[in-house]
Figure 1 (spheres, rainbow, N blue to C red):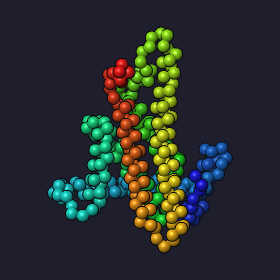
Figure 2 (figure 1 turned 135 degrees about the vertical axis):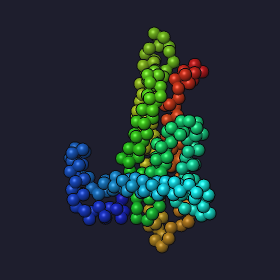
Figure 3 (figure 1 turned 180 degrees about the horizontal axis):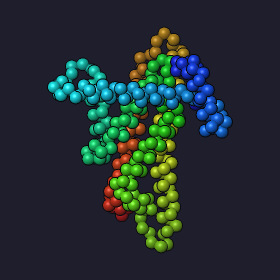
Figure 4 (figure 1 turned 120 degrees about the horizontal axis):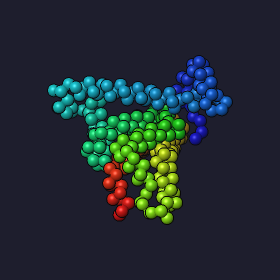
Length: 267
């Protein structure tokens, strides 16, 4: 995607020390290629989003600890009610896919991903701001983290059985070459294809949505059309749901017990 300029770009440009450190880091990591504030911006914005999510979570937790007030629903939308509805919706999604037991066990990953991606996507609706999820580096990082976690959970839950099911059905001695091919395809899917599908899909959708929003802002300088705002909000929510939905599916498949995998192969 083409480079963009936002308020954060100008802010980063005001700190030459940060730009110098970023350039030095780029020369070390990217074979001499300098890194401008455009490349640093998604990382800085993602850190700010992470801090924002942490602060909101701490504030909501403090309100929920007030037991007498927490049991009574508030009449208007507040931080507490928003967090309750938001977290409850994504917990319901995880429970429907993985079951109640595994949903409770693995929901910290899903809930954190949902909050981070939602608020990151939401930045694209603020004029002059750019969502960090429109950067492939950020979205691939999210996808890679989920891939590392669901493979770790699979190994922890099933041990060697998690590796064994990648081998496919037992085809005997003559079927060893086919089993090796199946294993290579399954391993490639687990390690490469799934994180790529998570990261690239999210990045493309958010980058295109942000580009369309910028075009609307350029065409109509005084106000953003209401339909475009609703469309942007819809994209923000849908992309968050799809990322978490796929993450739930991947974690659910990885943590299924070995007998389920074997039964699926027999069928």
